[in-house]
Length: 196
Image (cartoon, rainbow, N blue to C red; front, side):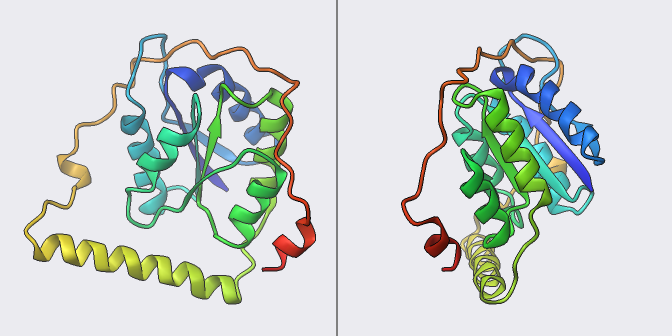
């Protein structure tokens, strides 16, 4: 697969390790992330990666910031993107199996290196299950279509990639130390959850 990856200043160190992992797993990677230690704005990088995936220039994307929340919010503003903030094996698996997530968001400051590696491995290797889940993902697409029609009807401006100011790709920052003692969340009845 072709994977686009982006990060803000909080995700630089983690990004470098994720790129190595993704290449070891046999995928092609393009880095659209911050490249030096200056503070940057996560929406700029999320937009570039999300657009690359939405336009089918890449199969999937990975975004990394301190908590993963900002990147997730920003990426999900792009039509056709289903960005999922994953924090353990279960969220990584289910975001692909049930939601056909095409962008993975990670928390550089909250997860240890081994958890991040495991999440990335699971997310990249898990296929979309389809079936009843395809119907649900199609409903998401219809919601997007209705929102875009509504925005156009009301005279609102729908962002155009050509009119957007690009990210400041000359900036990056030092990643935070990771606490390997952090444990992923647990679900009491995982098998029942997976079957819904």
